[in-house]
Picture 1 (cartoon, rainbow, N blue to C red):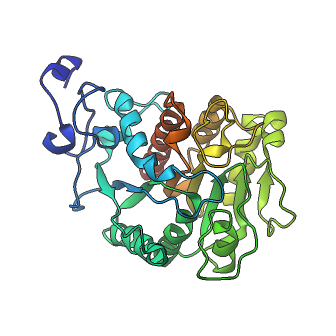
Picture 2: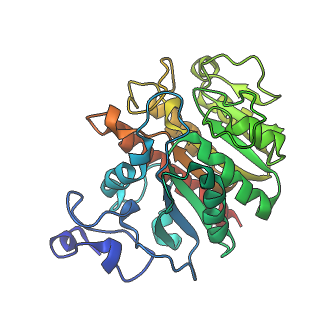
Length: 321
């Protein structure tokens, strides 16, 4: 295809003939799907499924992340017709990637959400397909990790975040986006010695032994040292990346529920993610994009770019074999 095709191609979420390749469709029109991938629940022959979890009822401050998946899809249209910068290959052409759509759930029955999320992700993984997920609040990473642990055992975890999310919570019925990592460690879904948190800049006296590379460390040590430290923690183990958009400074991502100043710049996040090529990435998510608090759309744009970097990392792992 060529850019000339944008004059005739429309609604490629439904009309594209295959799951590989770029999409030359006007970014401002057509049916929305992540990166103009085909919308489908059919996973035969698929390598990676992009899916949305529009749930934000576990937030402690500003809601709105339920609108994150829709906003990220819209922002991603700008990245659908170019190979991603900085990688030297195009995962959209090398991998079969689809938009699996959003998870359906009853918003008035919050208690059922954890099990439904786990089953949603487990259904994809059971087809031997990886996932990159759009949230939604950060609680959602916990049931996602439960599904991943069934397939891979305890995974190495790279958490990009302003908050450690290790507040003590031993009530299995509570749903709180500030406790997902505490519960994941307690349940044995991840091990603290193979977990690293990047960009932290809020206090929590007990980080449960997780390696903390806080925002001042990243600013002072630089990208290269940060990448080296992350790789030394996760090693060759199956690895999951969760990226809370509030890891970025509010100057780059104001549309989020619990913004904290002093965070990473977008260029730092991009450079770190690209530097992680070679890890054994098995899945990832982008969470806490809350469009109502960002009239410019910058946060959703950042979320779409992070999502693309996760896709590139996933493809790089597959290339390596």
